[in-house]
Image: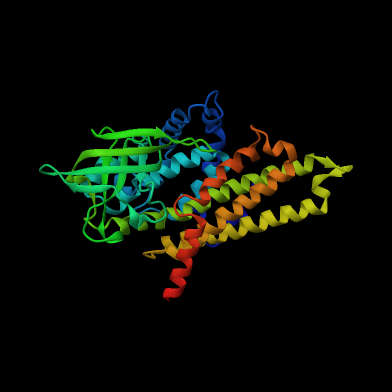
Length: 391
């Protein structure tokens, strides 16, 4: 039985407790029919499309966009996003991925899009009719966003031309549009970036190669070969792309920690059930002191992670313009400790723990990428230290 006592913490009121309970019930009833269906893991593209549709029909994607465009709240509520990601991840890493990318992929539109752009894309995101993607990473520009080389140049009247190469793009190949960050040349490094929406059917956009990773998700390399995009698709002002990327990550970085927390909670649930059933030297594993020590460590790290995550979310929801330090701490600690927690669960399962088809083996593969994307653990330490030194 998953521990939900954290929902009584001061970060939450009854509306959040209802959200968590309602989504948990929906996920238990709906997700197995999608993620456990025959062939679901063989065709992750189709499975993710089905998940986005289901999440839209269930009303959960409304939390990814503002109320004016079909969303739940006037502005994005980070505590809700975190609760949703934690709950979905506990049930299915792929379901969490599908939800998260609708939010991250459209987040720059929410923050900086014109009214017309918001009206064009956001209602469809909330319904699950359009799949979103966040196109930031390049072969030589991952955590170092200021090194982006993809170009945004003046084109024919009323258009920009986008040229360059993106890689490890989530939803690459299944997205209906990409929020692309590119070098527009207003200044050196971070000062010369802009963001623009590129539709998936734009001539010159090619999905060059799908990327296979240890926990299958839709990922691809994108090539932009002089894609002509309307000037109206620009997000915010030219040269403000770096700030927009950081502001978007400022919202969603805490939710990465929440997804890790959901995976860790599931690992603890699996471990507790297993140690009660499995005997060693004539008594259940759960009665072995070393097992109790490991379970205590797992529970401790889970609660510490939850405190950091929901502190960051609460601070943001309380009106803080930026929560860079808090979000970095939450993402760093929760993802690192979730991997340690899941590793303990795998160890308790013994040979079963590394057997394909076991839930803890799936969790082991799912957690690893969370310590890399949206800023690797090492980068989060730099973010925290630099903010500390600047005070």
